[in-house]
Image 1 (cartoon, helix red, strand yellow):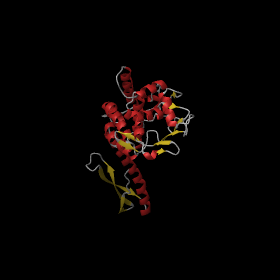
Image 2 (tube, one colour):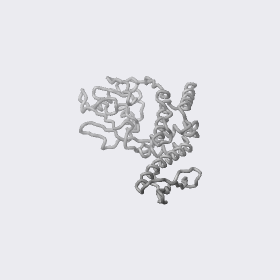
Image 3 (tube, one colour):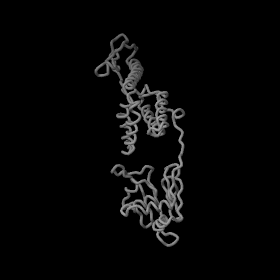
Image 4 (cartoon, helix red, strand yellow):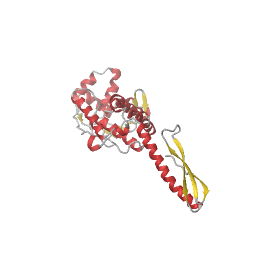
Length: 312
């Protein structure tokens, strides 16, 4: 926002010359000098009249600036400028930025990229989302509709914060797709045991750890020695590996997997758990909570907590 105080020059006979600048898109600098006469009985009154008039002029300049910016910014320009700076200022993880960029480049920008932000209306959003849904219904591969909706709503919300558009064209009541939870396939303990029996020796520890904890692979390979509390048999997962880069947080926050010190037969819990998986014993597999959308393996000696699936 530009703010001018303006300058006044006394001309005599109760008249004062007020000088200021106004925005003008056709001018090389974007500004044009202007002046006008104001009338006031005293210098003090002239100062008050100047302040009143400059509030009006500053407001007009700001409106002109906003309108000029609106007319120029396309969705493609916004995504590589304002949106990119917003994500980096917020400290978004590289994996998050990559996911957004992939969705934009493959599905959103080819259709909406050249449109000005002010020209993208709720009707245009409806037509765009309908096209994606129709393509998926016809068997073509495409993004999840909810992911596209979420990204667009977020982007246009940022655009409104920048005063680039008067309102968000992505409307919850009009555009948010209904989420339909699908039941995920679940392996029986016997099937898990058969799979582990086929795992090569060099990968067995990794496969077994995934089976017992059901954490993401990136979180598992990011484990460091300080994450293991041998005295309390506790494993803390607070990092993630993405495309060879170590990130200092997991997708859902820190996850703690705790095992009791001893199983009922005197074995350590991890050894007891491994034996039961391999022998298709008393383990049971159940669906995960809504917050993570993953599956989990639960036994009497094993508690998974800290990721929305249970309590520590």
